[in-house]
Image (cartoon, rainbow, N blue to C red; front, side, top):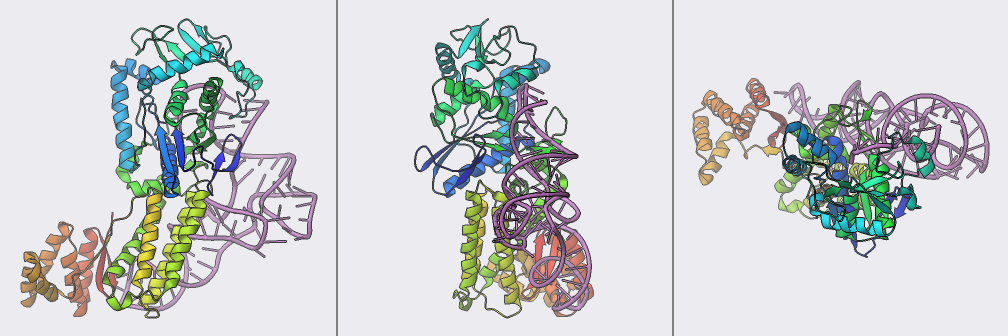
Length: 517
RNA sequence: GGCGGCGUAGCCAAGUGGUAAGGCAGAGGUCUGCAAAACCUCCAUCACCGGUUCGACUCCGGUCGCCGCCUCCA
């Protein structure tokens, strides 16, 4: 059973979709006036993972993430840069899509633009007016907060307390300082649409109500977003929708803030790190790892140290996987008997434990811990194999790999590509023999040189190949050096390989290299 | 002032009424020609003070510290 923490009730509740077998999720997306920073990205990651997990659990899950492409901030930026609002919005919409794609997030099922939702918004506003929940004033329309008895049910604020805190000296057209605009009269030069109240544009909160209801229907399952949106944005969404007679989201999920220097990451504070900047320095997998090793509701500090740790953690998992897959490939037939079901069983146990964590309010950190536990278990098993205490069971290894890959995929963490390269079988001479079949000229000539004992020339070939990112010749030569106990030569070659960005590991099967990023 | 949340080892981070997953870093050891990697071992009593309980880190009350919202904000 999946349980989700509902901000409305402030507790975990069993997730009961409105339509059995299906799930509708709405998440507040970007206002496209700027490049998205790491903090903006957290909800996109969180709710993409939620959709992924619900699907993994067999639900037909739909994710809607809006794009606010008409708004005060966009208009202000356009004015400042002497460009049109449409141009600004277009540019940053493209950037948002490019950056989230680059992170490796699958696109939402629907990405509606506010500017495409005008008719629905106008309909909703009309309903509010005729129901007495909104009023027209100078071509703008305001929502009458005191007309909605449940106002404050999400943020747990009392209207009267709010009244005290209101610092805005009442805008001219508002009947009550708490009221908020659902439709704003157009000023000259601003983007605008025809409406029963004259030309204008949607207010700040109305688009989310219109979109959520349009694409997911009344009483949809989950509404998500950053914790900082609870008030007033989400509170207002509820008020607008439900005052119009349409039950809104039944579960509200809010992710914690990303902090930088102990403070919420925000443009106004000046402590932001752009998603694309981070992706310039770290792999998508590392960044996903960074997000998911902390529970989505907790605050998360941003720092390069944390990214580095995420990188190391991911590398550990990638190493295990690469090692396992290499062994599967090299296992002889006799070993493929499934003699060690314990590990297979362990893989299944990990899968179940992982699912339990994920079902428990999307506990990705706990779930990841299970994956690491399984990896460690597989390592111990491999160590036993290397000591000759246990026969190699390729089936069990395959089961572990399958579970790790499947669950990483469920978390939307890109699977590692195999980073292990092994020496061609045997020495350079032996490898050259094999090269006859494949027609590898370079390896053949290396073999000829080897036959003539011209090792220095071979070293030159190795250097050349290393520069091209190919360590196989170096591996083969190093095996030769080690076989002939020419350790000075072997060490020299290791230096070369290091310099070329390869980590060198000696194994019973020969020299192994790992390309270091 | 109002509302909400957090405080777990050197760092990060799960968890929980019956004596604390995992990752990073650190120490010692095994393996190795030397390394690297790996493996083994070691490293916390859960901010503080009271209370409830056979038993609390986990429940209740208080104290301190930190954070978010109350204005655009993921």
